[in-house]
Amino acid sequence: MRSLLFVPADSEKKLPKALAAGADVVILDLEDSVALADKPRARGHAREVLTSPRGNAKLFVRVNALGSGLVEDDIAAVIPVKPDGLLLPKSESGADVKRLIAMAGLSVIAIATETAAAIFNLGSYGDCGPHLLGLTWGMEDLAAALGAQSNRDAEGRPTAPYQLARTLCLIGARAAGVEPVDGVYANFRDLAGLETQCRDAVRDGFTAKLCIHPDQVEVVNRIFTPSPEAIARAQRIVRAFAEAGDAGVIGLDGEMLDVPHLKAAKALLARVG
Ligand code: COA
Ligand code: MG
Image 1: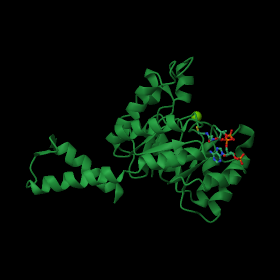
Image 2 (image 1 turned 90 degrees about the vertical axis):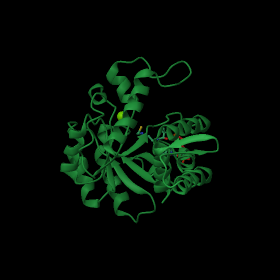
Image 3 (image 1 turned 135 degrees about the vertical axis):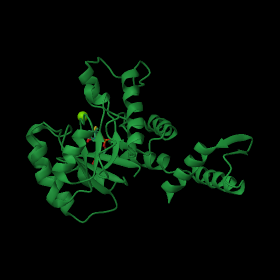
Image 4 (image 1 turned 180 degrees about the vertical axis):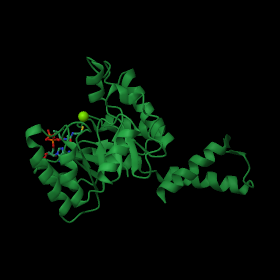
């Protein structure tokens, strides 16, 4: 799982394009990109997509938030047609995820930074069980929750509260043993900026990224696929430790490598199979 592409589930025009965009996961959105009056129609389209022959992309549904008064109908509409998972918006803690799992019995990825309270609970996702696949973060709802005038500085970079949300999402996901999924890059015309953000995300440990436009998928898939150079280096590191008799520390190319480097190399090789 590298790219997860949102598509408003009420858009007959966009749904086929999203399915053909090459994303690893297509997220049929029933929440914020769908107006209240269009929710029933969106649920109908989501059901249609889920009952049609499936391609390579996994199909997730973003349901409305717990307590919205809408999530029960979302679940009733899509459970019988078996999506691969659900995206839970405005999750405030592991307890919310457990509630959704109890209601739906499906895999879940939670957007875990969209309210002020959520930020204090990013360490609470450790006991959700195997249905919780990942945590991701968003900054538009959080900005509204914080009463911010803007969530970006003059250069367009997220300001401190949103960098904190991103960081805690990454650490919370790793602490829970689930995938850290980077949030949306909203400027979908700026693919160079997206690429920079993807490289930063991979550097920091994120393994996948949310997309909002088909053009973003190629960039995300490319940057989140470990490069042949990275794979070759990981193989060299594992080999060098083995040749040193599984030593605790070795020198390779004039650099000290110890157990964390070996673990990282093994984790990368496990990802690529
Ligand atoms: N999925 C499928 N198709 C999409 C798409 C998406 N997420 N985003 C754009 N497209 C389609 C457009 O319909 C358009 O099709 P056309 O060439 O037949 O007219 C084509 O791709 C090019 O789109 P473009 O003109 O560049 O963008 P737009 O102004 O039509 O749409 C958005 C911009 C932001 C409204 C659109 O990208 C979108 O709906 N994104 C998803 C929003 C969402 O789900 N948000 C919730 C999570 S934050
Ligand atoms: Mg939102």
